[in-house]
Amino acid sequence: MRADYVIVGAGSAGCVLANRLTEDPGTTVVLIEAGGHDRSPYIHIPAGFLKLLDHPRFTWGFHAEPDRGTNGRAILYPRGKVLGGSSSINGLIYVRGQPEDYDHWAQLGNRGWSWEDCLPYFRKAERWEGEGSDVRGKDGPLFTSRMDRPPLCQIVIEAGRQVGLEYREDVNNLPPGAGDSIGWCQQTRGGRRRASTARTYLRPVMKRPNLRLVTNALVHRVVFDGKRATGVEFSRGGGSERAEAAGEVILSGGAVGSPHILQLSGVGDPEHLGRVGIPVVHELRGVGRNMQDHYVVRMTHPIHGAPTANERARGLPLAAEVLRYLVTGKGMLTYSASLCAASVRVLEESATPDVQCSFAPGSFKDGQIGQLEEEPGLTGGAWQMRPLSRGYVEAKSPDPRMAPAINPRYLSEEADRRAVIGGLRFLRRLFAAPALAGYVGPEKLPGAQVQRDDELLDYARRNGNTVYHASCTCMMGPSAACVVDSELRVHGLHGLRVIDASVMPAVTSTNTNAPTIMIAEKGAEMIRRAGRAAAPKITVEAA
Image (cartoon, rainbow, N blue to C red; front, top):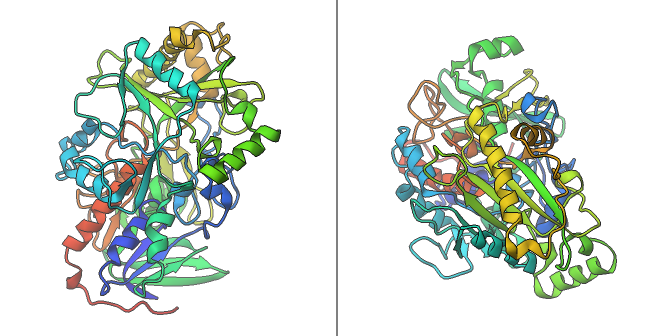
């Protein structure tokens, strides 16, 4: 099969690209996805994400390597393997981050990626349920909605005010230089259903004759003619196939998938590729390096006198919640992993808030997302916004079916260790505020016996987890450590771009799905601007 553009990965970025590039009826696109269709109710009911994090059909089943930062644990590392990618399995949180995140990208040499440059693409993407403004968009494909606001989280917000946090009604209307604050999270949700990129970008254009979708197809490698990418090889149904690109190949496999495919294709560090038996096509030492992720550590309290999700997750109360959801589209089945969040500065050297503390009106067994406890509970989770720790994604074999090595190397930097300790201490200060005094019982996790810095750090290593914000493994920038330039073109190669969270030069301060969609919107315009007319238009052909 042949097309102008071959996109690898129908996830958060790939669905956006397929939509925008096929707006021109003279441009043809083949979109290749390793997973299948997104028909499960767990995907579309917001709270269903709890059933998806280790789902054998909708995820890759990855685990991070055991590491000192996780006390030797090989933690689950969910990545979506389904139409919509991780936007179909995530916690639906829509938060753009601090304006300074993007100004930092530009300061690293990425012209056109400042906050002022990126804001129009955030607005272009979203269909905000509130009023439009210079900051919020109303006409885009991506439904963004306010969170349901249970009483216990309203009490948490009042506690935040009591410890000196500014309340912000719209956490996505954050001015530069903003200080410590607390507010309600927002969701990628339209009505009662998840607004994945598969639902909002891909499904409305599936019948375009210039778009071909290929599912359940594992990409093996990018095909090159010299230094030019000409297509990809993939397998499905037991057979091997090729998709040829007259214009460009675009990798949108995410922060794990995109560097892995580059390495399988012989693009990467020659020493690493030599160790695993992959012939070198192009030396690019930064591929798979610079991995960044947020590492969350949770604190829980039992709750008295206020409703939580725990006691409503079973029996007749659950049946009542299901009925409420069906009738009103509200209630517990619309909840995300966090409903409100505080941004606070705990490190003296930080110019802006450096720790995110997320709150949910429930608690999980052993503090790990999954099964709710039976007794009412409240959870606060702290993570460092801008970790200094850097990890890697590395192919372990030329076999594309073998999962790569994944290691964010959490807490390997001293500042990150100080930040997680400071975050836990802030949570204790907020939970001790007068507004919560009549509701919280004695701290359950980590427990009052854990007091010293070394004890808090040990708890963090033994109990922390990913916030699912893998990024930066195909870093954008002009230096030798970077993989793509500011137009998202792979350095030293032609006809090949990477467009997904892997190109971030530094992880954004909060959740990464909104920025990834913005990157794809901006990347699609870059491709159009580059002049598709330079290549002949190809009709999508059957295999």
